[in-house]
Amino acid sequence: MPEFVTIPAVVVICWFVGFCMKKLISSEKVDKFIPCVCGLLGAILAIIIFYTTPSAIPADTWFTALAIGITSGLTATGVDQIKKQLTK
Image 1 (cartoon, rainbow, N blue to C red):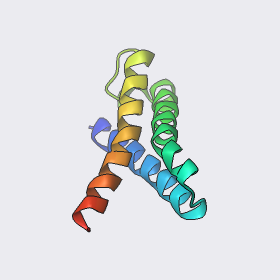
Image 2 (cartoon, helix red, strand yellow):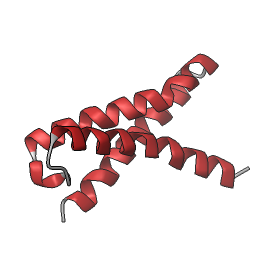
Image 3 (cartoon, rainbow, N blue to C red):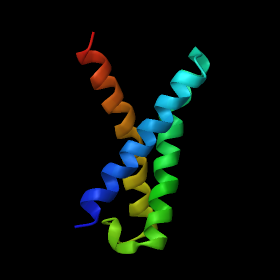
Image 4 (spheres, one colour):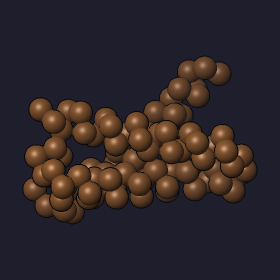
């Protein structure tokens, strides 16, 4: 059951960091790196969760946790783009 909360939490944290970057540092150069930052942050969070609370993330190895984290971080960027496209 904890994995149903952990992965969306990683997505929300990554989205929030990307949102703050967009609002605080408004520049085209920075905007290009937001997906990379979100993916990297998701990877770091997933590895930390994997080693601190192994049952909270559905992964058997650190490499799987890494892949889940990168995917979760990049999902945050996709969610933001969906929101942006629907409000245009």
